[in-house]
Image (cartoon, rainbow, N blue to C red; front, side, top):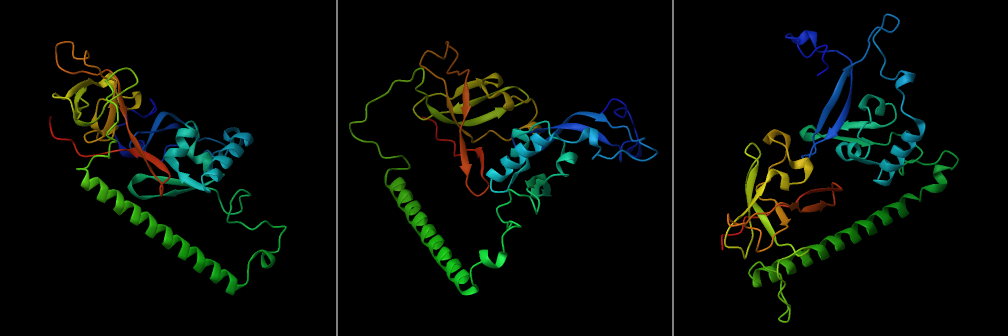
Length: 286
């Protein structure tokens, strides 16, 4: 909160105040306002206009933002956009882009209608009737596209079922060639595991790895910097997240297995076009 209103005890003393702030995307995808400051509302006796020329975004930056959104299909998650442009003012962005509220407090930023980089717009110097195929051809093209998509989905489903069948036959493990050599743990050769428990307040947790008789201890400092928060509200749940870790047989120091470097594994969501934490069941203790 700006210092001018941080000590206000009444709601009406705070609401409707115009502020400027920076946006930070948290690990869970939610947005957080930082470095808030009041904006002078006395401009010719009227409230300040967020579109004031002195606050306008640089034209080159707007062009760069537009290309970024266009390269992502004409729209993307606002959290992803904020990671690329962390100091962008949301009110100023609304002068150039469409910001659409989504579920669970998320938003989506899109190129507005009429933007030259929108792929679904017909260029004004072309005759739409010349660009669009006849209705019969368009319907036939849609049918063929739908048929190809259905075939692709059937193929993907068949491959998924084959993979599951092979996985079940091998007891849930990938098939290993009989001549596959044994690799000792060491620098650059990291085991994988699953976080069994982690307490942000206490600042430590344990990882379970198949093949290790004891769970591996890790401190808060072993996590990536953005996940070193001290309260659960500031970060996603880490229990069940798959990880890789720096670990050797000499890492215990007589107090049990320990690691000072934990890498969180990610998986890509094709439909959402974003990365999320890869989760899995905690394996049984060896």
